[in-house]
Image 1 (spheres, rainbow, N blue to C red):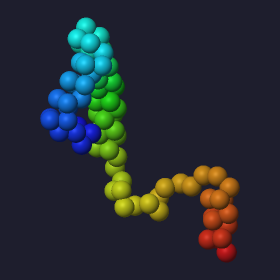
Image 2: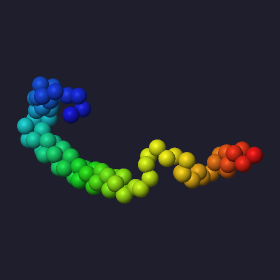
Image 3: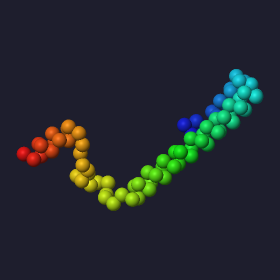
Image 4: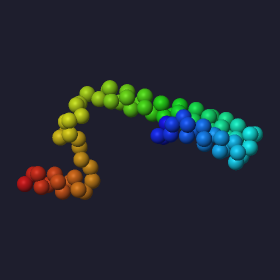
Length: 83
């Protein structure tokens, strides 16, 4: 998790306990747990949607010639290919 080992987490927890006190530190840890739980849910839903979209795709990823280009630079490129 973020490149932090268990010993570093324990030191950070003890430091938070000293700085904020036992009541405030436990409240902050509980709030952090709720935040992580609430943010994990939408992330997992997003991952599931992406996985479903990849499975539904019929074309292989290497077929980039079939991608339609948009914008002024694409129109200039299309004109150059036509000549």
